[in-house]
Length: 279
Image (cartoon, rainbow, N blue to C red; front, side, top):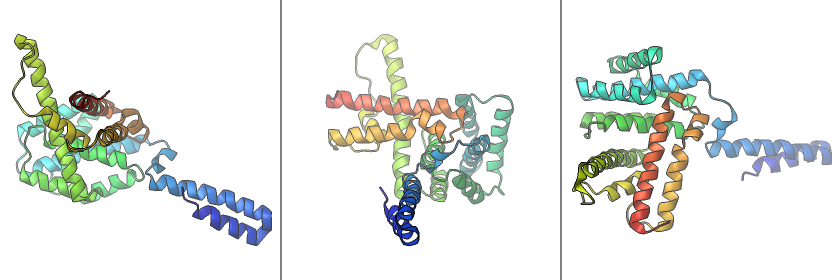
């Protein structure tokens, strides 16, 4: 808890108005320290209700950057367009909102699209709300991995986007690994459901190690302690809790996607719990 403001306020108030001034200065310093602590912890954005304009900027920038990353690999393919359409479906975008998202995707593909300027504006609108930046980048990673592979040019553009948003190369590599694990984890789960419904019983279905992907989704290795893996799970759930993200300015159209991400984290945790015999 910061105390610098209280000390300065108390001493200045004492010097000017003696004891009454000291008490007043202490109170003012307390308010200053609270604001400083909130800013450092990333909670500054909770002090006000996000505007609809900020939410609209989130959606516009999200689809424009998605189009820009798709274009980085060369000609935008039909598959990449389908991925963007899938995201619109998951958000339930219809009518004017859907047309705006489509226009944003097309704008991002244009050679003159100002990626740096657009992300600078978006980053300023998310000041004090780093969780929104993480969700934004996670959305771009999900789109890039939607076909199960990541083109080298798209990877480089993702790195550029991450750096413009304030993420380090190490953070991006970790998020890339988590996004890839999420894709494989979900795909493997769908395969297992189809395999079970086909009447094959409890026979083990061959495929990627789902437990390994579960650990990657939580951002930890398989050799961490039970305590550390529980902390990682709680951290991921805190960062991706839908209600918390909505309160910080996530567009309500993205509520379903936020819920899906939280469910993925929960499912990964259940797989790990079962493997470790945890309650």
